[in-house]
Image (cartoon, rainbow over all chains, first blue to last red; front, side):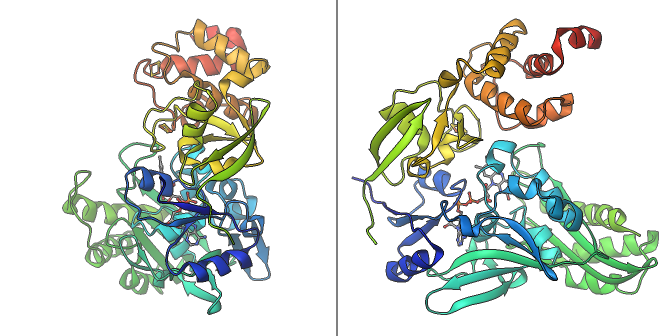
Length: 283
Length: 165
Ligand SMILES: Cc1cc2nc3c(=O)[nH]c(=O)nc-3n(C[C@H](O)[C@H](O)[C@H](O)COP(=O)(O)OP(=O)(O)OC[C@H]3O[C@@H](n4cnc5c(N)ncnc54)[C@H](O)[C@@H]3O)c2cc1C
Ligand code: FES
Ligand code: FES
């Protein structure tokens, strides 16, 4: 007999009520691209699968006033076909282009990608660089905004409580910002990222007036490279700056060695990719 | 709210309405193969990596081992079997045969569905775009070159193909 139960709420409110009642036993099912392989590998304890895939209110990309809002159930393919993201969030759009393969992109959602908590999650790094927050809702606490830099606690561990649901991701619009994303994997399609780098930079002439740098798969969580960001402030992105920034970023990360690459190689690569990602946004 | 151990679903599979009860964790792939006898969707890996289970769900090309059967409730599913009279699927099938893009055939139904979905959206692709579109479908036999040739020939016709050669 199956150890799972199933429920499909008709509204977000109903979903939050189920999460409250479930007392930690409810598992949210969105695109299921992580969930079904996990279940097949028998890693999940018995739980209620709460299927939110029918909640249309959680879908779509739109700009309201000064920010861009992406519903948690928006698929990677939908983001890839959003002209708004292609124009105003190049780093995210580029990450979607390189995400898995076109078939997986039709199912995988951005909310699921962030909630799953993989240090290599491809949407995490550009969204960190774009200074995004997750809107998280629960019956007990209503809505709260979690800046992505506070979302992850460790590999596959997040700050989202068992009774909470991510409803949307938002980040500020900024016409003056240029952003970029680079993913390095072993194969072009479907390889887990060895390392990813995103930059989002504002410049006055050629002087950096604000820089954000994020990296993935180089530590227990996707992370911001704060010291590198501080170093870039007020400088021009020239050869000397690039060389120094690459050195600094190498000191800010703690990649592991595994069968796909050594710690040394990943550390070296982080510097190289940062240089490229900065060259790409240079005014 | 009731937490169900069996989920009653109604799905249209290749044009036929099917009512059934599925387990919460059952994949759409398992449901089709075990309960519906639709066996052109193959299970190569069950983990989303090989693409042999590719089908069209609510107009989108997806890997059915990554979809809960319950999530197909109220939706339309098309597998290669059901696309017999679809002109684009037929042209692709014919082109695969002529180009030797089929060897053992295990990947073929998924490959054809993925190629069809892609050409519908991008009727005039580059070869690189064809490769990217099929990157979620693995083939152990053909080396992909012939598959790409077959899709290319459907997009541009055999004349274009000779020109290229
Ligand atoms: C072949 C293959 C290739 C892949 N390639 C990539 C890749 O290149 N890059 C990459 O980053 N990932 C990749 N993935 C992983 C996966 O596709 C993504 O992480 C995807 O975005 C997960 O979204 P989902 O909707 O399918 O999540 P689900 O599987 O439905 O859920 C994942 C987790 O998040 C939770 N969850 C889902 N939605 C919410 C929500 N709104 N609020 C709170 N919790 C939620 C679920 O409970 C579960 O724990 C790949 C997977 C496969 C099978
Ligand atoms: S069986 Fe679904 S992708 Fe391999
Ligand atoms: S023809 Fe054998 S796997 Fe493709």
